[in-house]
Length: 270
Image (cartoon, rainbow, N blue to C red):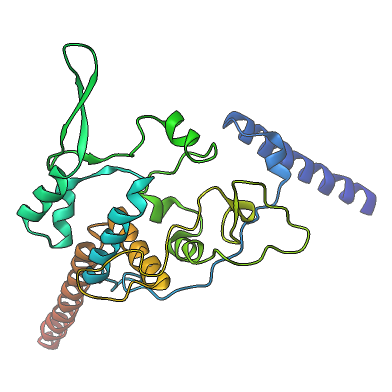
């Protein structure tokens, strides 16, 4: 009997593995994934406290504005934000004249001229923050074969989220573990995939100038630009939280009124 139950259990597990393999095959994934255990190929980032975390979270707009300064002066040299328009930057609290000035300082493709040569024009409010490279091949060729990712939704799609982005930006400079070989053109960063990245350290002490006079340390820049990326990915988060809190308060008031009405109604029943 025990042998028979063992065979049935083994058959059930084998059937489960087979079903998982068939499902993954249908999704276009390798069947070996069905037997693989999920794991991280990077060091787990230390948890951080963010003002925008939790149901009552909100964005520190001063940090968001400083983060845009870091993006504009550092990150935009390699990364674009194709889901963000210059007009969206008005959500930073900037005046429309300032947003127009930011947009017009950049040029976007405008087709070709009569000779077939590509031409550009000053960007306007409806234009997107595109990659500085003309195409993915040029972007990869300029970055050791790796195309810099678009940063529009990086904070919500990047494995590890904002905690890992912050840890990654401040994770350079650590000595690789013994036996770890870092190929030429790559940099060791424990928070990168497999501990290696093609992106050189992007932040440096005093590398940007903050309009509000905040000291531009690497830690400050990293935290500010991570906050900016979180805002870009969820620009209406604060408004949603306010609506949610208002709805909860309304429902609580309605509940109290309902209880009072019920007691008053039933108290008059003989």
